[in-house]
Image (cartoon, rainbow, N blue to C red; front, side):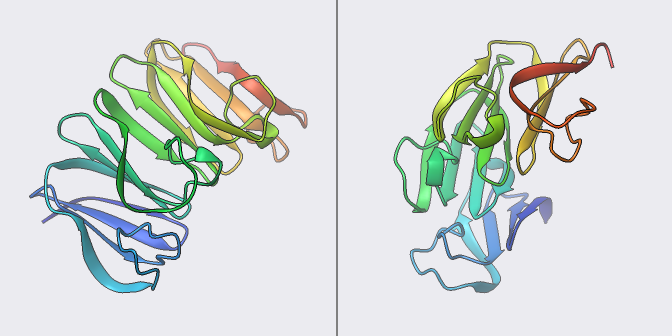
Length: 197
């Protein structure tokens, strides 16, 4: 009865057909919905129903609900889970109340795609990984693309997104060539990698 699974770092989250969400593994940041930070060796229920999708970040869990709202729990350093308050959260907190299409959690930053095609970011801003184009150690929930985004993925220190017209954009660290620029740099705002790819 499992329809989706997500994993990151040391924990795993499952979505079942009844809309319930379950998790197991490391719980040091309370990412499994338990104020007790002990690791969980078997799946335990995080929410009972009405979830449509799950995703993970490092020590964080995202739950997309049937009504388009997005919940998050776990480690929120640098606001990376999208909450406007720091610290860990042992219970799901609302990031958006509606209109979320997808979420991708990186190591210390996250990407949020809304149904209107806008792209939002939050988290650690080192090496330009949030794509905001501005300096600063942390970025609270911020829109960086107004419309036209079809999908996205957050890596450890870089991100990528693609548009409904097939254009692919990258930003963040290129120290290992992950942005495809052919040179070592930090790309602080989205740069076109492919057009009509």
